[in-house]
Image (tube, rainbow, N blue to C red; front, side):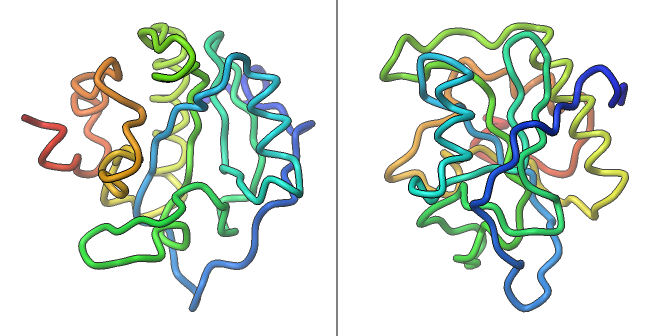
Length: 170
């Protein structure tokens, strides 16, 4: 990863804690921001009153913002479940993709954004034993639909990052 050009550390979120019981991340969990602009999303993810965060935000131009250290538990999954595990935050690295989402004009993810995401996932996998790459929609299907039907799961699958949820492959 060309970290010098893509990472920005000026957006630090205070919304994190230690992972529970020494958990190690085995999931990359993808979201869309669901907000009209990247700046609005970054402000919310870094607002202590919001009680939400993610490890990374990938902007539509490919810029990657690092908000929370990977060894910490960011607050992005909310009430969720994966294979009987209900503390998905302790088991995952959360990545928010800037996209207005279904409520604000959902649109396809630009190629440069997906390329940056793929580079970031490669980088994360070098440091962590990632087994799964999932969407928020897979761990909270009754309440979330992101990153959604316009997300290019086929490109992620071709890169070979862990396993994708079966519902993604169909």
